[in-house]
Image (tube, rainbow, N blue to C red):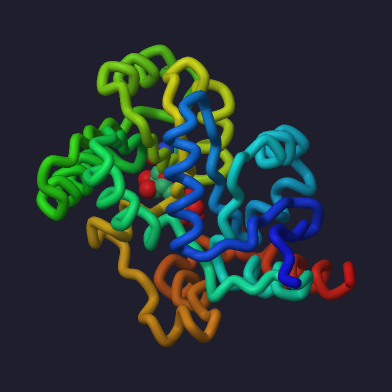
Length: 240
Ligand code: UDP
């Protein structure tokens, strides 16, 4: 019997692969209301240990996707049998296709000015008929009224928020009910990858669980953030 979910150092992770993640998101969008989908990576888990608000918001998520090999490794130790990570960057193209098929509107919020707009154009080209709008906005609470107004104007069914963690999850927690979108997903740097502004690690490195190394070499400023990775691994080993 395979586990349906794992608790990685206290953070829930759903044991799910891409196909079932898309089905779950489809069901959440169908249900209406307001749902948070989180893409959980080791940095999230470590942050949640010291940031109670972030831990609370992650605890309220309706779906916690295993984003990254570190979280998949930890979840497999608890009986999860997912085939690999479900990342925001891999999720967005099939999600856009699903929205086009279902006639659902998408909204891309966040990243540097122009990035979300470029991705929206790319998704429209790849999915004729898809209604998708974009707005760079800001994670600053002082900009919430303006950002909420920009999102609600489009009445999206699916909202992707790329402010980086934990800002994007905190934004969804704060403003999600005001925008009245059935599914809101924090997607980190996905817009930068999908528009080619940041190069993704080659497939062999991703399969070997070495994406973190590629990111570190390309973006050395990540070193401070990534310093939590060995601590994460050590705590996961110690937990069992
Ligand atoms: N970002 C943003 N507003 C901010 C800070 C970051 O829109 O105040 C964007 C940034 O441009 C990038 C995304 O958030 O596209 C993800 O940032 P990060 O690299 O921190 O996320 P990760 O991929 O590590 O989750």
